[in-house]
Image (cartoon, rainbow over all chains, first blue to last red; front, side):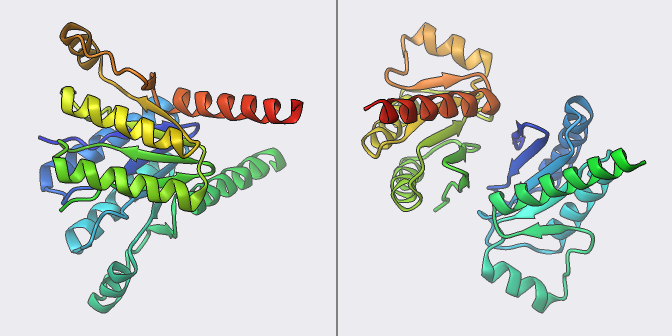
Length: 127
Length: 127
């Protein structure tokens, strides 16, 4: 079975999805990601889907589920690189990716994560 | 045909190789990478091969070739995330990945690229 690699960059984890996800691969990714967040203490997860030409309800649920798991482990998830045609289809299908944050590309996603971390640090300092 | 996504982060490009490379995919990656270096003016390329369980002479040649193309476009290539078993097999097979720089993981690879860029900037200033 194929496993999707998770790359660590500072306090962020980066996952690039390149293949059509099968159930087993998606489950393995959730497990690996949860384990890696716990081990590394990462505060952010970036998921790049620029290689995906179709995002169906299965992938939508998986993204929402990863995002939920990361949230309870105190990490924020940002999905980046969605192709314009994918965005159009998602909206037409009524799939709104509830609870999943998105950004145009990796750089903007990283910026979003850093801003959220800086804000959290300020809040901590104020308490 | 599958295309491998190339992510831009600052002045670096990141490629994660997750699938067994076929000739066509490898050629497309070379083309895409050369075009992206030209368009973005990137100074470094990180290639993550942590998902590969086998690196044969074909992949070795491809990595050397990408590294060579990037070099003439004024970008440095670092291959990161090689599995220990892959490193052992490479040496046993006598494949030494000539002209390809390696680093343990993405973070160290990024560090290597930044150090090289800082050095180049100092050299420019000294002239």
